[in-house]
Every structure is written in C-alpha cells, then in structure tokens.
Image 1 (spheres, rainbow, N blue to C red):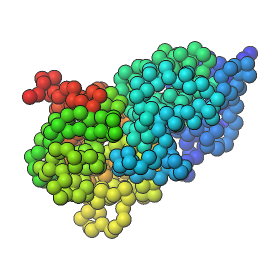
Image 2: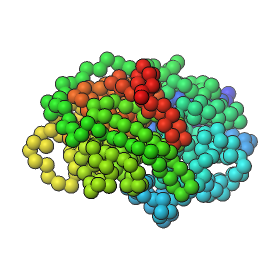
Image 3: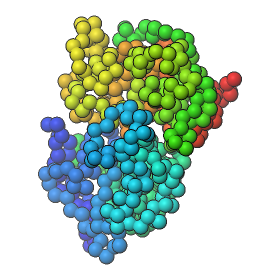
Length: 487
C-alpha cells in the first residue's frame, strides 16, 4: 500500500483567540492535485501555511518526498500577496512611493530579483525565459519591484514557483490580478509541471482550472471535507437600509470630474501612457480594463493625484487644471479609493472603527478625535456593513472579505464625488463578491461617480454604464454598455 504524500492528523490551530482548524485529518495521495475552496475566513490559508511550515500548529503534518525525484524536496507556498523589500532589506513602503521611485532606485529590478533567486536555488536562467514569455512578463526585466502592479507582482511570484518546480507547490489565490490571457497560460504551465511530477494545492474558488486538478475540498467547522466540486456560493442578499447621509447626492464642485488631453507618461525610454484622451462626467459609472501592464494603475494614479508627472500634462480634475495651486490633499477630498496596493500599505495597528473613520481625513490611520456628527456616521456605517461585533478588532485580524468591506466603508464615509474601486474583489469568494458589488450598486444610486477596475466580466456591479480599454498604454476602446462606440 502506498504511503500518502501528505498525511495530517489531529491538526489544531487558533488565530486571534478564534479556533480555525479543529482536529483536522487529511491525506493527499501521490498524483493528486487539489483545489481547496469555500468561504473566506474558514482557514484555507492557515492550513496552507501550516503544511509549508510557515506557522506552527498542534498536531502532525508529514510530507513523504520522493527520494528518487529530481525535483526539489521542498514545499513552496506562494502567498496571495507578494512581500518584497528595498535594497536595505526593509519592507516599510508607503503607497505613493511606487510613482516617485524612478529617480531613487529603491528596490531591485525584476531581472536582478530573478538572478538572485536563481543563484539561491541553483537554477538555470535559460529555463525561466519561456515562463516569462508565457505570462507576458518578459518586458518587465528592467522594472523595479516597487513599480509593479498587484497583477505583475503575482506574475513574479508565479514565475519563481514554476521555475523552481518543487515537489509540492501551494498557491494561494493563483489568479489574483491576472488578465484572461495570463490565467489561461498559467493553467497550461501548471499542467506542464504537474506532468513533471509537481503536486499542486490551489487555494481558490475559481472555475477555470488546470486540467491536472483531480480533487476538491472545503474547510467546514475546522475540518477538511472532500467534495465532488466546489459549490456555487451565490446567495440571496438582504441589504440593510443605507444610512441617510449617503442617500443624498454628492456635492459636486464641477460637472467635469476628469479630463485628459493627449496625456503621456514615460519612465526614461519606457512610455507607459501614450496620448490618452478621456473625459469622465459627474455621475457616470465607468469600467476601466486592460491586460496586465497596459497602464491602468498609472492612469488611476493621475486621477488620484499621486503621480508627479501629472503636472507636465494637460490634466483637469474636478474642473481645475492640475498644477493650478491645489495640493494632493485638496484632490483627495473629492475621492474615495480602494486598490490592492492601498490595502497592502494600510495601517496594521488600526481597528475597524478607526480604519473607517480615517476616510474623513484620507490618512492610513486615525490620528485625531472625531466630532460627534462624524462619529455617529462611522457608527451608522459599521452597522450598515454588519461590522458591529468587529468594530474594536484590528483590521488585519479580520478575514479578507470583511477587510474589504471595512475599506469600502472608509471610501464612502465622506460621500465622495468620485469612487475609485481598483480590483476591489481580489481574493474574495463568489458570495463576498456578489455582496460587495450589490453594496456598490446601492451606494452609487445617489449619483456618485464610479471608476471600477475588474478583469472578470461576471463579477461587476450592474450600475456600470461605460467602458474604457487600454492596450500597451493607449486607449483601444471607449464604449457604452451596448457596445456603441462613444463619440
């Protein structure tokens, strides 16, 4: 009888005084490749990290590596978010640093990072080049790590993992931030390494999966349960009544929210945006799309007021020419923002209540006492989002789905003229995504302007009216929902 490749007995784990895994038993056999899905917060990531030896847990975890295999006798865990450091070994970055780092070379380039990883693991560099091409990442060799978007960071994680080919590869949210072509190519690459003997555990709820996947499981009440397939998590949502102060239309300073005239952004010889012409009117609901590296994040950084090159372009925000005397904080008063990068850099010491309240001041933590009216509005939003029992907990102690609800509450606390949601549902399950987007529809019904970035057509708010598509830094398409090209 064959010995199981992974054998887990009596595994128990608690997180922030909450039981996550309870007397869990699991066997993963040779040649099996698993997807572990289900609701956010059930313990999927904790189990994955325990198997990889990254966190301690009570119980027994045995990995029976193949001594005859040429593949590394290693468990590699690929985190849902990529943690990188600067040249001094420090990971203390701030949000806008991504757009101001071109002059001061703060971090390694992608090429240097891969060279160092290859030397550390004893890998041949010629073996990574086909992976870079397949994931559309070969052109980023000279980019600093801090310049990369969330999708590009995910690609860098995946490139390393596919290059190493460990005997057990665990990927948490493998498709986060990837465009459709990259997701398809990733599945082909995963099938290839599975044929070479790599066994896979994917932590996700995605439907389009590699052909090599043989088994599915979910964590229920702290135990791993094998299922025939991942069940649809969609359900009927009963929204609470929206707070009165958000039923009122935003006070618009201008009917022209964004206007770009022949906008160009370059880093040295690399042109990221080329002759962008785009106009957003008050109350419009836009979808911003494009492949990884198409320039979406840079475009949004101009709208947010974060990009220093905005002064060198003809850019109008809320009726004013950029550089006409307004500060970055003047601009941010009009905007509510969620993005993967902003979530990365948010204050880890802030409670749920403090995180929401900080939206009044556009800070990443609360550093002053709120007056009674503002405190009452925070309390109303805490109740509206179903976060009353969590309001005094640290934001980072919550499951990812609830963290995103907290940040959504933060973005709309001041009833902004413009709501920017940059891939807000990254890492959320189907149920949470449905809930989140229904909340967005409800919140935008008061006339708020929306710019929404999302790769998955099936996971979008219904209120979206128009779409702009970028391709290699240029506007490829501007259209309405009925695909009639706008003039």
